[in-house]
Structures are given as C-alpha cells and as structure tokens.
Amino acid sequence: DTTIFTALTDLVSKIKSAFEQREFASLALCDLSKAFDCISHEILLRKLEKYGLEGVALATMKSYFTNRRQVLSVHGAKSSPSTVLHGVPQGSVLGPILFLVAINDMSLDQKVLLFADDTTIFTADRSLERALSDTDELINRAKEWFTCNKLQLNEDKTQRMICSLNPVEKNQADSVKLLGFTLDPKLSWNRHIAATCTKLARVVYLLRRLVHLVSEPYLIIAYHSLFHSHLSYGLLLWGHSPGCLDAFKLQKRAVRVITGSKGLDHCRPLFKRLGVLTIYSQFIHDCVVYVKYHLPEFETRGQHHLYATRHSADVEIPFSRLSLIRDSFPSIAIRLYNALPANVKNLEGKRFKLVVKQWLQTKPFYSLCEFFCETFVDLFEFTGRFLLFKKSFN
Image (cartoon, rainbow, N blue to C red; front, side, top):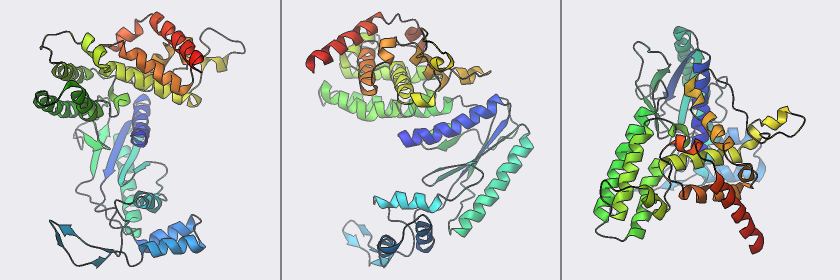
C-alpha cells in the first residue's frame, strides 16, 4: 500500500500544482495488452547487461529464461507442456522485479508515472489545446517505445481525462480508475467514496449474516479484514472530503451490528469498547504518523530562527491560494501534526505511533473540528504516564 500511495500522491500533487498555476491537467492512462506475458527475453537480457549484470549472474538469468515449460491444469485435466518464449514468470518473486527492469528506461521528460504495468502520462498547460496536443505527442512517443520493446498498447482501453476546477466541454471522461482509486476531474473524491461505500455496504450485510453464527471477537476480526481494509485504503488522500460522512454512517452501522446495538444507540461508547477508530480518528492517526515519519522532507519553523521559539518544532505549511489544496493532504496533515503537544511530537517514531493510536482509541472523533477544539490535556498526561511506565519497565 505504501508504494501505491507514493505513486498516486505524486500524480495528485502534480494535478494540484496545475490547479494552483491555473492550468489544465491532461491525463492518459495507457493500457498494455498482456504486459507481463509480452516481455522479450532478448531485450530484457540486454537491459540487465546494461545495468551491470555480467558473467555468471547474466548467464544464470539467461538460463532462467531458456527452455521454461508450463502446463495448464483445470479440474485435474492437464495440457501438454509448452515452452515459454517470452514474458516474465508471474507468481514468482523475480517476476515483478524483472518487469520493472524492462520498463525502467521509459522516459518521457519525467511526464510519465510508472507503476507495474500501469503507465500514466501527465501534461499541464494554461491552454487546453496545448495540454491535449502535448498528451497526444507523448502517447505517440510511448507507442513507439512500446513497439520497440515488443509491447502492445491497447488504445481502446486507454483512458483520458482533463482535470480542471472549471467545467470543460466534452471532457474525455467523468472519472478514471488508477491503482484502486477513482479520480474525477476536480479531485473531489466523490466517485471514489461512492465506490468505497458500495463495498462497505456489502460488508455490513455480511456482518449481519455472521452475527448469528460467530461471537463478537470473530466479528471484530471480520471487521478489520473486510471493512477496515476498504475504509483505510488511501484514506490520507480522501479523508478530508465531506463525502467521508457517508462512509462514517456505514462504519457506525457496522459497529452497531457487531455489538448487537439498536439503530439509534449512541456509538461513541461502542467505538471505545471495541477499540475501533472512527474514520476521522483513523485519518488523524494516518496524517500525524505520516508527517512524523517524513519530517526530513518538511521544513520546520525552527529552521528559520537562530533561537528556540515556542513553535520551533512545528512544520511549515506550504502556501496555497486554493482552499482545495489548503484543506487536503499534505497541508491538513501538517495542521493536525502541529496541533499535538510538544512532548508527543518529541517521541521516537514507534512510541509516537503507539501513543497516538492508544489515545485516539479513547477519543472517537466525529469530525476534524472536534480534534482541533481539543485541549490535549489528557494526551499530555497520557504521554507522561506512558514514558514513566517505559522507564520503570526498562
């Protein structure tokens, strides 16, 4: 999930930057036909040699590809063995690595996002016509590269979309799917949240069926494996959206089902008893932990002063003229992190993560406003007790 999030964050940040510069962002999501199965062994071996593989190591890789035979088995019936003439072995440890080696030298002026067999072309310009023409040019260059590397672009399944805060006539698509996310032209995340809520509603139905078959501990396991996995997927990117309220309603419904509560029962005590974070508490947790683990990538206020100040440990929030950017990741994550007490921010990474999660389990937030209105007195005391316990235990 981390690598997927990093790849998508890179694309989203480019789109937001285009919005900030009053530009149109043009996307083209290229679809390759049987990408893993079409890799040329000869070309791949040449690339491995170019990257420094030689001698016995290169000969071993050549042997790895030579005379590989596979059999198809369906309901006990097996086909006759056939020799694999091209493609990287799927299901193997080396398969994804070799595929990345095969596509790693695809460079289109850093305007392409590569993740496994997903190739996304991005261009931006204040002129819509120039943005589209630049995209067309890059697609043609990509087609040439694919042809030279014996890969086939499926133009019928290639998706294109113009991202802009202003309406665009005859936009190529209302939304596109990338790495499990549904992107819309304005980055509102409404379509992604709607798709997520559909999945969550199915899980709630499943929990209703399970409640008569298994006890509460097993229902909690089912919740974390089936419900929480969908709820938390990429939450950093869409957790600030007003549409989160729809997902939160389904989360409360799931908690009531697990505990056998009635439809109008208050859920805060239920979240506390189960130790389940609300969607807003989970978003807060993910945000502050992200900033903590990526502090070297941010500027702190202390870097701009020759002397210590009260807020020297706070992270600088990048300026933006758009509320869409100010209220979304990473700006909202920095604001959440800066709101924490100093003794919490000074904790080492793993301890910081543990303390924040344990505190949030006692604080089922129903909105981000509730967090920003916190005095954090209990968190300050909780951190002090935690440090004393660790010190006495050691």
